[in-house]
Length: 172
Image 1: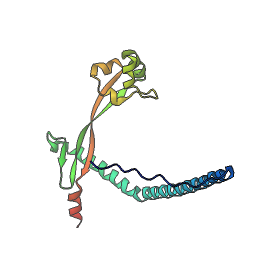
Image 2: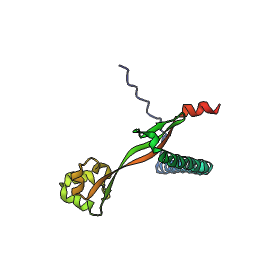
Image 3: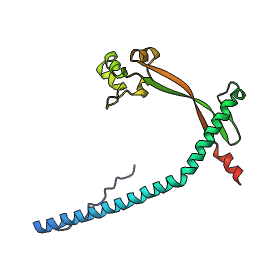
Image 4: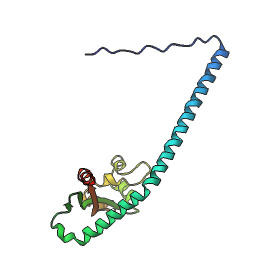
């Protein structure tokens, strides 16, 4: 077992009177202002870098969306070629459909949850700002969802998943 080492206490500056104490308070304030200015300068640089990055990658993001949407249309028109599979692996990656589950609710679901469940249990399905917690509702059965005016919707969500090593090898 290693021995715990406590750091030395920092040295102190001798304070002789109230005026001297007040001067130290001023110095702390000056140092905190310097820190605040440095943080502000850093934040400005970070914000500028983020804006620059967003601008530089905007067309790239748009191209990705265009290619992904085009692949989705192509896959949809060739869905019969997938057979029983939901995805197709190509040399540079995989495309297909994944199960995507969401909970749809009615305007009355919040009040129904409060009526159906005890106060303690209802809190698990209601967010603090009094909105329905769909992630928690997802754990309920279909019958329980129906009681609170909600239902489970299952759909296939399209995806494109590049396998980067194959794509990198191709660029040589």
